[in-house]
Image (cartoon, rainbow, N blue to C red; front, side):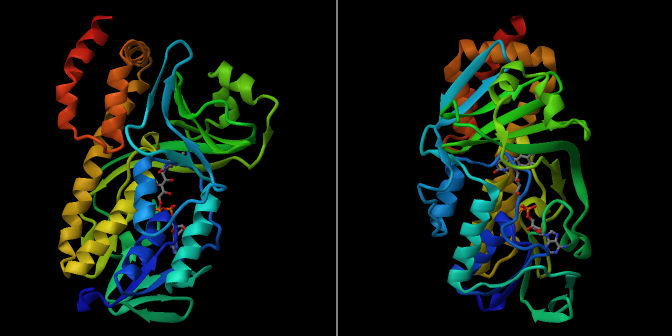
Length: 369
Ligand SMILES: Cc1cc2nc3c(=O)[nH]c(=O)nc-3n(C[C@H](O)[C@H](O)[C@H](O)COP(=O)(O)OP(=O)(O)OC[C@H]3O[C@@H](n4cnc5c(N)ncnc54)[C@H](O)[C@@H]3O)c2cc1C
């Protein structure tokens, strides 16, 4: 650990903040984490941990026990008339309830000796560190991990946005055995619904749309097959909503403040990459701290966001119903293209590979009908 960053305060104890606390503590830093809620934190989420998320958790010493979550082997896209599936090229993914993941990460951070303060209100940045509820804590580095509406971002004047688009997500769990070994993405005329297996007896349904009032029950009317499947299933949680934001900030680091996770910019929820990004950013931040060069984090952060951003733009073009129908029909005829795209999506192969499997040729074939 570089002596310049001996003590660290992390504001926000979601997946990204806890990952940062764990990675920095493993580096030998004295770490304090403060959060305004109490664990286990729940959040509207598709709850899919892709294989690279599982690998990132493993790297920070967190194993998901067999009894936590439900493995799935790939992704299925369907619009009711066409469907296509692909397996992950390496590893397995898992659907895990946010509350279960939160407990595991909180426990791991506590075991490593991270000082955890929950229910902390009025967190303020000071020149020397942070203050909250009358306490003040010295910090050489402040990590802003306080989510989409980050106060740290605002207080550190890092909230200059280069690009921003908002959609809205709602999720609910149902007591029903998963019917597929895949995470399903159902494409409809104005929304998309994810189905993630989260245990042997439970699934998570999450809808994403551009309409803040468009709730799950309404959305299901556009997905008759899915509606039929969950019709008799008992809801296992209440409906919870969250913003799905595509946001690019000009900067994510300034002075002694670094942003991480959704606080540092995000990609649309359709990618299922949000938690994975937070975990990878935590590792990048810990490496920058180790080398004593915080500015290196800015560059690695930009590089980490590039692929999910491009995949998000590509996927959101499918919101257009005509294109959606053609592309899904085309992918159903050419499942190897879908396999290659999934491999790029989970970071198993590079973007250059897209050219080698002739995406342009595929595009022309789609447009020709
Ligand atoms: C509908 C939907 C589906 C999604 N599906 C997936 C998916 O399948 N897979 C995936 O990987 N990602 C998914 N995501 C994205 C994922 O949920 C986020 O990227 C992830 O939660 C970001 O983690 P975070 O720790 O940065 O922020 P958060 O999880 O939002 O945590 C922020 C923490 O900061 C705390 N906090 C906030 N303000 C303050 C304050 N002022 N003071 C102190 N503490 C504060 C909060 O209490 C919270 O604990 C989805 C998102 C949506 C909306």
